[in-house]
Length: 284
Image (cartoon, rainbow, N blue to C red; front, side, top):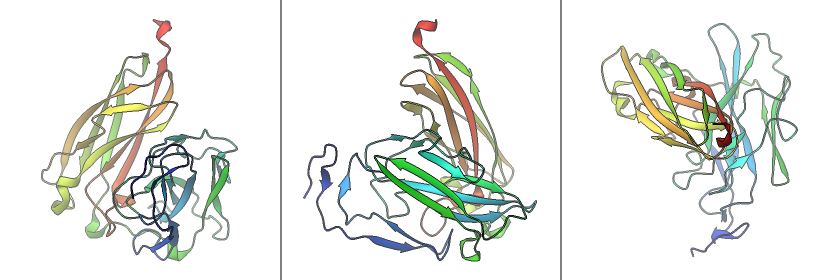
């Protein structure tokens, strides 16, 4: 039965059954309880569930622990500034985590509905495997934590067939504008052309990563042209803002590689960010 929703009222009335999913890809062996289609669904008023994805050892020996999240709302964008209610420890509170949490997707299974591999925490090669990295988020009065551990069961696999992640340079013109002016975002991408069978899925996706209000991208996602190995492409988009502020906008550049669950493989995705300063309109 479909119902209208406002605040904590459900938009879908159904039996509340928790879905526990085990994924054989990233963080393999890890069980994560996520809301699934069978549960009551909310437009707003719910919290954020930070999630630990797993870890990957870089060529220089350093370690990246990857985290994602699930905003349990279907419409409400949550803004949680870095600080006591959005912190990563040790070494925080700011370890590059988002402050803008987009709503849960309405389609796909449990893993497609979450925001996967959102940011890494870089650790030294001699990191103590018994020490934890904890991301804590408080929203709508509830505090949730994701605990990162350097266990073999959480180790992420590199892409198959020696596939290299794309390289990207991003820029914004201009870096400072007066509201309501917009900016142009440019991503210059180079890639090895692998995997060839999924080149039509390669894309650059822009997201509002930090900052107040709302950012509108036109378009939010741009395909990377299909071609042979050694692909080089330049794609642009326009960003406009709902009001003044300082914004971090991030490009996720994926070469088309996906895991069995349909999500991009983290080690074949490159993330680059730009900062934009939007002054009040009366500053003209």
